[in-house]
Amino acid sequence: MTDLTGRSAVVTGGGSGLGAAIARSLHACGAEVIVVGRDDSKLTDLVATLGLGARWVRCDVSDPASVDALRHELRDTEVSILVNNAGIAGPVAALSDISVDDWDEVFAVNVRGTFLLCRALLPLMVERGSGDVINIASVSGKRPLPHRTPYCASKMAVIGLTSTLAFEVGPAGVRVNTLSPGPVAGPRMERNFRLEAERSGGTVEDAQQAFVSRSALGRMVTEHEVGSAVIAMLGMPGMSGADVDLSAGMIA
Image (cartoon, rainbow, N blue to C red; front, side):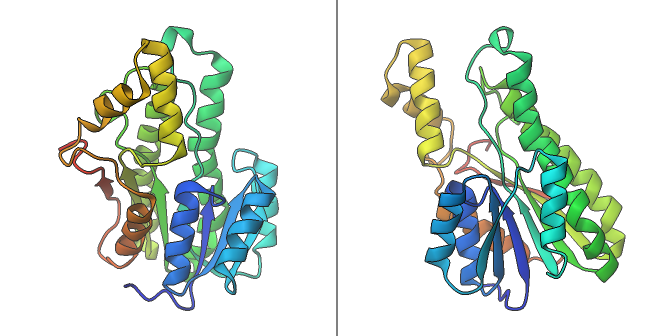
């Protein structure tokens, strides 16, 4: 395991799901972890389970004022790892049935949130000459996923942001990479399968099987595997500007 003792990591969307799994993996490797999100009770519960070396800060990543407040809160913390995990799934519907407000909400969290956190925390990394940013994208968009256009488009935007930003800050010693999970077993995918079943008139089991049949391993990845992948990426000092797929072969 990569030893992260002495490093401080910010994980957005950290109260549950992938964010919580990533926070656990970072903490297990010795990092001080600051979990960021909008649900105080979930953040409190996670930090309580992690114990010493973990704390939480409430922040709406889509709101510039809230991100500025987070930056001020962390003014005395040398953040050297930023994991932009906060994201929402958005509607499951044909593009013609998606409202402008729903489209904008997905991009506000998934893309603008990544931009705002990078803008807030990268300058000090650049000044110190080291740091790691890992942006959580998705394999969705890199192969067809009908009725999920806002989500897919937003995650491809994150990949484009990452590749360009890596070249902006790489000369200063800061690495920026993307981790693109495939379908991750958990409540979010269960919701998507339920909505797809309602839309198609089929069963939830049929919707799930149709989805996982696209992968080489015929299954979804786990939250723990995503957390482990973040640690592995941090242990690869020559990696920058990369988009790492963790999809059980979803786009093989």
